[in-house]
Length: 330
Image 1 (tube, rainbow, N blue to C red):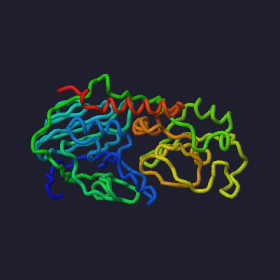
Image 2: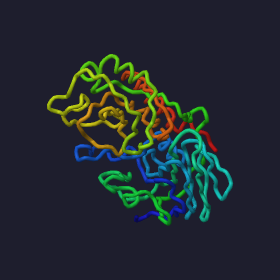
Image 3: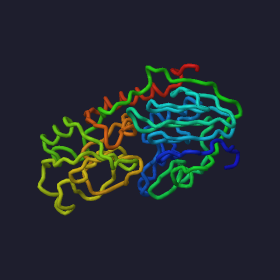
Image 4: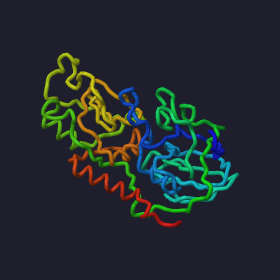
């Protein structure tokens, strides 16, 4: 891109590393586009703020780690997300902290072995890729945005809009860093399709009282859980279909917990914009970052019901973490 500088050569792309920005492709749902963007918006935005980027600048989402790149120009990088081993020229460097790099440096992210699922790598100035429908985010399903609409591959060259002066190095205090686990409590708001029209009181007890296992077939499109046969408050959906979870097509919310028949699915950033299934609850926006760190095939999740006031309090906590006045000089 004009004015951009080659910044990283990809040596090991990992499982499905993509370029994302925040909040993604908003305002396009009527055209069939969910926003894309990072699944864990909190770690993503912190990584950008650590290198003095706007919190929505384009950066990398790295599932499970196993990533390596060669640095092609001097700058500043930061890696956030679950604990793993990050090295620069085979020497360990800290996470949640910005680190200077020079041409020829070798940056390596090891595999995430403990809790959590996605790392985020930001470069000072932001990754320079063209905007598509108002966003630099990769949307893998139609193959648009990001780096040629796809996950990164070996030998790809990423440009960055390197700032004229290197920003100061900073770290996020340990007390403000999110905790990762394999047993999650996730704040959700009931509905829009819950009781009494869709779910019975017993179904609600199961929804909020059970531990749901993340299915191995989970990705950026949706997090699926172990099947469960709800009682349902109606025998069928009439003209919408045979199963009580069916309804006439309507718009889906990001983070909606879809009852796809007997399978609950959290709608991720690359999901369908609409469909004909009940959304029994919706993950609070400030809690969506947790969804990005669920490990498919392993983690278990409990849904904790909150009201709008409590969801607002969560949002204020996230805003506090992102306020770089609370960052420390590294």
